[in-house]
Length: 101
Image 1 (cartoon, rainbow, N blue to C red):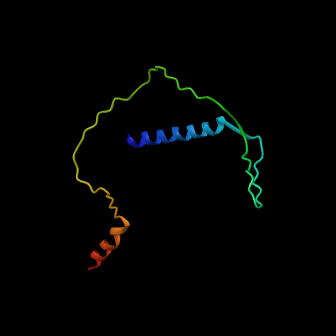
Image 2: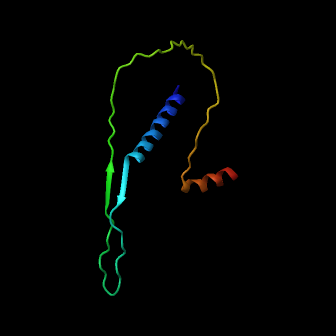
Image 3: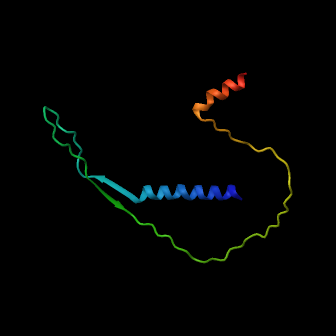
């Protein structure tokens, strides 16, 4: 069930990013230029942009849907689970030396 929730959230995130990219229109209205450098330096010119963005509204409504009724029987079992050991760089050399002895 957690995997399905993760997949659904991932799909929603991808859709949100796609909508965000689609809803923003950025047009460069002025060219950029580098500063002129001689003995003295004059300031450069940053480009100007006009951005038109859309809007996103989140609504909520009530709907009746069919939901399965599932009964789950829980049993205990002993399994092997993965672990993670993190060694900071300053301690890694000490640990390698200790393991080789």
